[in-house]
Length: 85
Image (tube, rainbow, N blue to C red; front, top):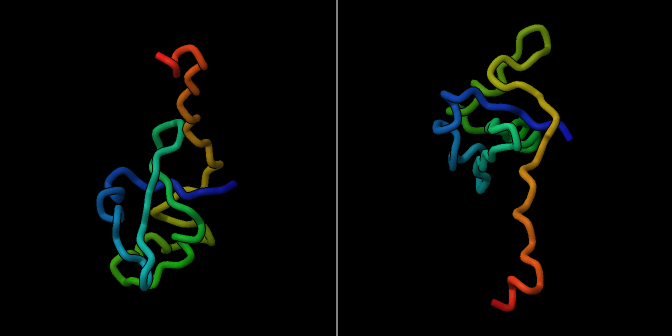
């Protein structure tokens, strides 16, 4: 799945920001520590304050980078003995 890597200086600008009516950015970190947003967030931007993320040059986004999503693995499940203690 392709997601969009934010520049470090843009993370705090978009975090919790309303990009469309009743729609808010929820950037998360991947396993490599990259802050990312979804294609739905990027393509759904209607708020002029965030249009800078949609800028393109020669068909490529300028302020975000498409990358393959690498989720952070969930924490290990406790084994049954640990769960009873």
